[in-house]
Image (tube, rainbow, N blue to C red; front, side, top):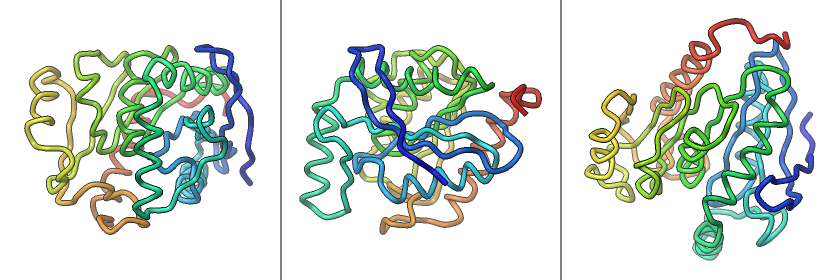
Length: 229
């Protein structure tokens, strides 16, 4: 059963919340699960429980707590507008500090991974490039990765995009591919948000395949049984 913890950001000392889901199987590592623009919603908590069932101790940080503690939005226009506003008002340096706090909480017990969606996909890329202690990262349809594309991941990283995602033009993905020719970039016959069964673009087959690739990456990157087992 999950619970809310409070972490302290090395960026500015701010205390922010994070949803914590203990691992339910033999421990395979820790996972920093990064929200969409909608906050740490029931969907994110459900995903956390799913990864916990696979053996991952999960932390899902509330990245907008400085603006509105406990922010959770639905998928209506007003909520989306507020989420976009908060995402634009949250600087990447601050995000990197908050994510480092989550990594630091988990890394004393073994390997730590990151995965995130939409805004969280870009934040996952950020974590891979700037955070110390990550073992691997899997970023889903991170539109704003383009803002960070010249940064270099420090750990094995994979990217997932929908071929029909109107918010992420093919040329943006190609720019990343040119800069990082060895980076695995997977394209799916789906639109934006294909991993979320709360969204109209949900595509079950693509979601299952992307999840499988994510777990395979984590397993390969860990290289050995988690020392905390």
